[in-house]
Length: 599
Image (cartoon, rainbow, N blue to C red; front, side):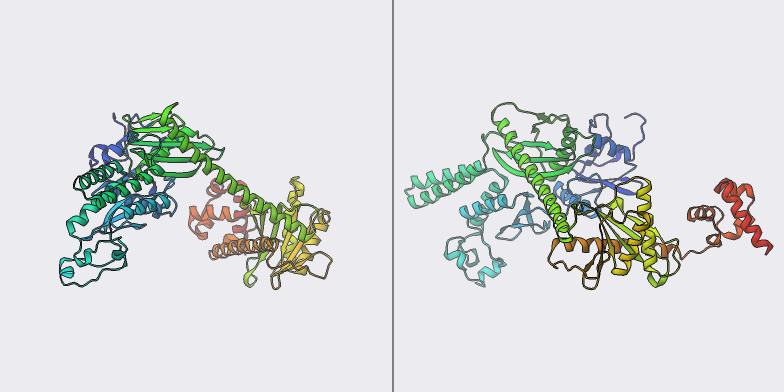
């Protein structure tokens, strides 16, 4: 590695399982888990890091590495999941949501129970998963309950309690789902033998279970115990039926990860499968935002690492519909062209395409809803054009101080926050809502007029007839009064006012168009209040500089940052002031100081 400086001494890292954390200027930017911390962290900084743009960018930003050693890789998985959900690091693109996948747990009881849970508490039992499909998890539990006698009660089946006959058998015993260990009708060794067999099913080792049933059936038949042999035959049939729903093409396919991708310009739709003994143990479809310079191959390079870590995969073969590089040389990434492996890739891609179709369909439904709402608004207000661009104005002058106003913009029925604007009232003195409204509407559309920017399809004024009249006066002065539809909304009864019409319009309270107008009004009010509070907070810091015409907030901050107080500014030379705020403003400031001194 030469003399290159790394954010951690790589040689000092432990060869233990744990979680590593990457920081940039004190901010956590990535969390990962490792079976071997030294190998995993070192892989980011060696020459074979790979060509992934995201990985290279991540490594460039790392200035500090921290790690936590845990007892097992499973502990690391849980800790990693918790850290990501708590801190939301920007490079962890998969686990940022609060989604918690279910596990199957075999409890630590003397007679263990088998159940599903979303809380993996290490001291409660042995956990298997996580399962991305609740249906798949329930299929496994259903199979186990069909084949074995696993108790569902919460009794504490200690030797003492059973000996003292503290419990009685329940309905589960009478319908044949339990053999009654609570009354010592089933021995502990017999019960644990069934749990061991159930454990094989959870792990996907169905062949071991099937071989056990075949052997038991033959033994029972040889001993002329035909009733018992029939029971084992029924269990084999259950097993085959379950296997027929999960086996893919070839039972010889072992230890394979399948990942496929299809994408649009902005999003990638990925399906991941883990296959063992011809059975899909895991299948998960996800959506990832793409950057403009990012290829499908680069997305897969990052995702496969996180997916394998999340689902604890140790397979050495990855099948995909795209060739991409993997950081570990011992891994084999293939795009199969024929045979059963090709069918696996096609199945995975089919899931990815379906996921894409569903996402695009949902987006289209959202768009249709937006169009429906704006069309409804056009009809309700009897407008000539669909109002795809709406601007809404509101004033704020709590207790008459710091009068301000806001304008929010909705495009296609949704907030367009980059087009929001706030205004300091300049020409109106005191709490004059009508005068303030006229000023800001005039300033807004005078600017659009001067810069030849298209006007909105609708203007909404938060207020009644008075504010609406003031806004209309501004439009008349600009000569565009008849060019833009304008309405006012009164808060009390949610009445809609038109210019020069004393009778308000009442839109149904259940109407989507009224809800859109209310959303506009509320957003404009929120934006104005936020700006007003900000100004009031800044106004707490007063200075002599605030009284000088031509010295603005930025200039004031520069001076105070340099000289700390107005008294020290008074003592500064012209050259010192010029170096900080320029000649013109230095002359203004010096003129004020001299004039004040002469008085």
